[in-house]
Amino acid sequence: MKRSIRPANSKTEGTPYTPAVEANGFIFVSGQIASVEGTRQLRTESITQETEAVMENIGKILEAAGLGMDDIVKCTIYVRNLQFYAEVSRVYLTYFKGDPPARETFAVADIPRGVNVMISAIAARG
Image (cartoon, rainbow, N blue to C red; front, side, top):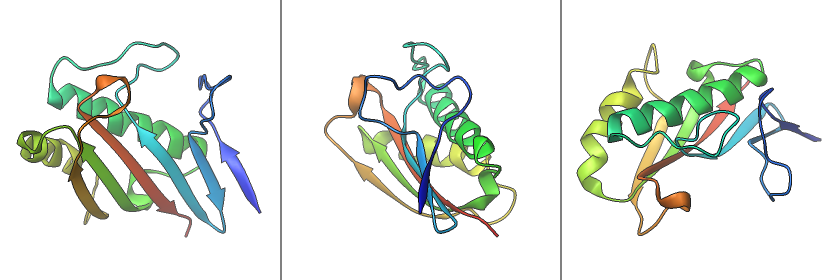
């Protein structure tokens, strides 16, 4: 059985999008961008701020599921340019207390809404 997970201020009506789905003890977090909660605005002043916003959005979704960042077991990172790789990695690492989750990073031609970074995650209960 699966269930949808949505933070309290999530606005996804009218779109084919669910922030996260839980199935069999795993939480699959959809690709997150640097959107400002409850608005259509983006935090893209710098790749540092953009990555922080993405990670904070993932954290809010996991919180809605009763989990935290250290429950993440796998991430996929998409960047528009590999020149961002080092800074995205630096910021990403600050969100984990112990070893970071497994991950891969891909350079892609385009990301929705013209952002520079998008991250999806898989977390596990227990």
